[in-house]
Image 1: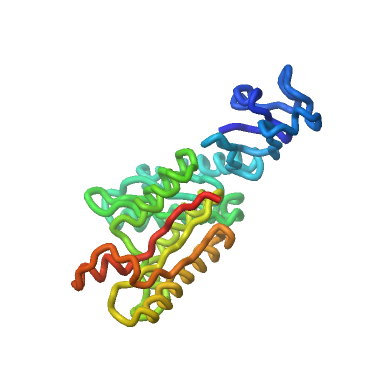
Image 2: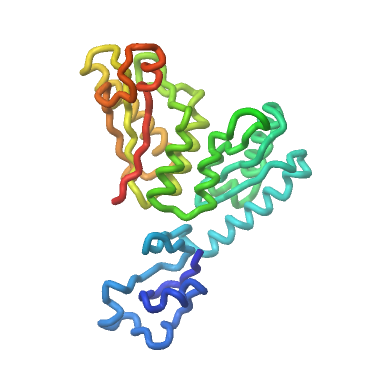
Length: 282
C-alpha cells in the first residue's frame, strides 16, 4: 500500500513514493506544472491509499483517512467475536466489502456466527452507516466451503486482471446462479453466491466484467437466446442494485451456442445451463 498526498509523481520518484510520498517533490524531480512534470512518466494522484500493480497506481480508497478508518472498524468489530462465542470468526473490510471468514465447527454455529457478525457490523457507528456489503466466507469443518472464500483471498491480495478472474472462476466452481424454470427470475437461494460475485466485481472496479448467460440445447434457438439474455441482464441488475457501477458490467446472452458438453443428458443440461463471468481490461 502507498499513502499519497495530492501531487505529481514521476517514475524517478517511485521508490521514494513507496516509502510514503510528501507534498514536496524529491530532490532532482521537476516541480509540478513544469514541462518536465507533464511527461508521460509522470502522473497526478489525488490524496488516498493506492496499490502499485502492473505498472499502475490503483486507488484502494477515496481517502487515506477513510482507509485507516475501515481498518479500525475491522479491528473494533472483530475484537468482540470471541466474547460472543465465535473465536474462530474473522472479518476483512476492503473498500465497501466486508467478508466474514473462518471455519465453523458445524452448520448451526456458522448460521449463528453469520447472524452475530452481520449484527455487529450494522451496530458499529461508522461501519453500519457505510452501507457495507457483507459476504459469507465462513467454511464448515469437514463440510462446505464459504461461498465468499475466494473473495476473502482477493481482499488480501493485489488487484489485477488475473487475480480478479481467478476470484470469479473459483467462486463459481461447482456453483451456479439458479433461476425459476423457464424465466429470468433469480431464485432467492442464489443470493449468497451473487453477493460474493458482487464483492469481487466491486473490488475489481478497474475492469469491465462480462456476465455471460448460457442455456442448454432444449427449446428453440431464438427462445434460448432471449432467455439467456434476460438471465444475464437479471444478474447484472442484481449487482447494480448492490452498488456496482453500471459502466463496469456487460451482460450477454449466448443461448445454446457455447455448450461445455454436447451430450443430450440431464448432466450435460445442468453443466451447459450456467452463468459465467469474464474480466476484461478497459
